[in-house]
Length: 94
Image (tube, rainbow, N blue to C red; front, side, top):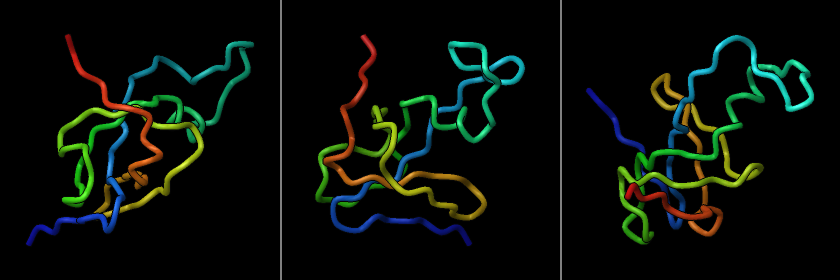
């Protein structure tokens, strides 16, 4: 049986959009970065689940801040949970 996680209040469940990189990630100065730092480097995420009280919709692509939100593991998948006021904006394709 499949389950669905529905955020409470003004929270939004997102999954970061993965960017494929060749080799181990490096900083601008050439320092090798751990894999955990590389996961947070992409500020874009897809909205997976929302409460009815928020302005974004499931499927929207949003821009995230660097150091907010909470990491969540649900049914073996990694997600992030943010409050609506922490989301920087939505990304629309032209």
